[in-house]
Structure formats: structure tokens, C-alpha cells
Image (cartoon, rainbow, N blue to C red; front, top):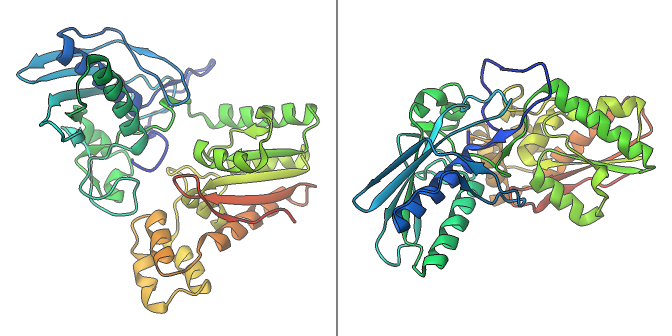
Amino acid sequence: MVTGKAEIAEDSRKPAGPLRRGWTTGACATAATKAALTALLTGNFPDPVSITLPKGETPVFPLAREKTGDGFAEAGIVKDAGDDPDVTHGATIIARVLRADPGTGIAFRAGDGVGTVTKAGLPIPPGEPAINPVPRAMMTKEIEALCTEHGIAPDFEIEISVPGGEALAQKTWNPRLGIVGGISILGTTGIVHPFSCSAWIHSIHRGIDVARAAGLTHVMGATGSTSESAAQAIYHLPEIALLDMGDFAGGLLKYLRTHPVDRLTIAGGFAKLTKLAQGALDLHSGRSQVDMEFLARQALAAGLNQSLKDRVLSANTAQEALELTLQNGIALAPPIAELACVTAKETLRGAPVEVEVIVTDRKGAILARTGFA
């Protein structure tokens, strides 16, 4: 889906040994795009093809498909999700690059098996292919670099397709979110970190242990890199203070009960922290959902006009509800931050840990901050 971590398959495929990381659909689409454009410009497909991920990693991808035609080139890469139980593991991500009219720039299209957004509240507006902002930025960067190298303007149409993607999407939240026709092209870092509750929570515990051993008095648990960066801009904590909480707020808080650190900052996006405010400790989309009734009650308490309640209740996502309230001058994030802080403190059960919660938007702007007591 467009809103979060890679889709989780029913078959976990969990191995017994160490977990192996993989690559997002966005990374695969970027590599396929670079290979196809290179072939369109030079007549040769680079195989394997390397790309640069947002954090500087430079993985290489073998090509599974090569095709050229009149004004286009096409490359395909089989997605390797590592040991993550992802429904798109093994899917072929295909990029077809076509020449466009001068001055039109770069345009993205949804090919077979890639969804189209039909409802508001997602990072991509209705009518657009379900290709998330970071993968778009990654592809754009590779295209612009190649065009600069060849002295041409970046005027190309990029069509991403995934054979069988429409069937795969039925195993995700895409249909519920109004993404029709296929899967989403996802990823904020390009890397799929293996989804294993026990392994991930174990790593959180070890992170707390390391922080305590180093004498740190302040740690941070963030749901993702955007919220982590926003909170880090305030505190500039050492790297070992940054705990990879992800969706496992419960795993973090329960360990801190018996292994306390003086101060804990929890940072996250509005939707994830709404779930925490509701009392959920596992924030993954497959195991907890935002309750629109809950949001409507908070919005009414914050001053929302009764006549707008139904619009909040019928919102497609938490983001849509947030935008609706902001448009009507209602600050919904502060009460969500306060209630999320209440959940955290209740979970700590009196452990000597001060807690603050920071809620960010998708661009990393801080919407609410409880501060420490």
C-alpha cells in the first residue's frame, strides 16, 4: 500500500538463522528505470545495474528482462525482499522508459499490476499512479544524472508495471484504501529490513542495553526515519540513543519497565501515534487500525463543529482526517500526542522513565510535542 512498510504475506517464510535484508519495490523500480534509460540512450543494458539509495548505499541488481522498441526500452528486476514476509517477494518490477515531447519533463505512469490512487488522504493525490514520493525522487535523480551525462533534457515517460500485481494487491490494504488495479511502489530507504517480531524486538532490547551501558540518560524511539530526523533536529542525540522502534512500541516500553532510562522521546507520524493513543502497542497496519470514531471524538473535544463529524468518520485515512481538521482550524495532533503519552506511561507501569511524544507530518514538520514533565 502507499502508506507504510512493505506488504506482509500470509506465509512468513521466516528462516531459523540470521535474517537477510532485501530491497523495496521502489529500489527495484529505480534500478530498472536506470537500466532501461541507459539502454535507450546507448543501446546497451547495464547488467548488473547499480543505483544510489537515499542514505548512500549503492546496491547492484541483476536484470531479469531486457527489451527495446521504437522510442522505448524496458528492463525488469525480480524483487528480493530478503527474509521479509512480503507479498511482493519474487515479483518482477518492470520499467518502460519512453521518449516524451521536449519540455514535458518526467512523467510517471501505472502499467499493468501497479495501482492508481482514487481516494484522498494518501501521499499521492487521486488519479496518480501508486508510486510513492521517495521512489519517484530516486528515479528522478537517476534519470537526471544520466541526462546530464548525455547532455540532453530529462523528458521521459516512466511506466512501472508488475505482472500479477493486481492479484498480489488483494493481499494488502490497497483495495480498502482505494488504490485500484495493483500494488504500490514503496520505500523510504530502498532497503527492506526483515520483518520478524522477535528479531526486531530483540534488537530494540539490545539497543537499550547498549545505551544504558554507555551511561545515556535520554533515548529515542521513532516509528520511521522522517520522525526520527525531526526529533534529532531538536536533541542531536548520539547514534546509540536512537532505538529502531518501528511499529513495536510495546517491545520498547515493556523492556524499559525493568531496564529504565531517565528520558524517552517517542516520535512518529500522525497515523502511527493515533494507534498508540488508542492503546495499541503494535502499530503495524496488519495488526492495528486507526479508529475513525476515536478520531472524531478527539476532534469534537478539540472544537470541531458537529456538522463536520460525519466527514471525519468517513475519512479514508487518518491523514485525511487530520487535513480536514487543520482546514477547519482544529489542532487534532496535540490531544493525540497527549493520549499517546498516556498509553506509554501506563505501559511503563511506574518505571522511572519520563516520556514525551512528538507527532510529525509526512515531511517531518512537528505537529505536536508534549514535552517532558
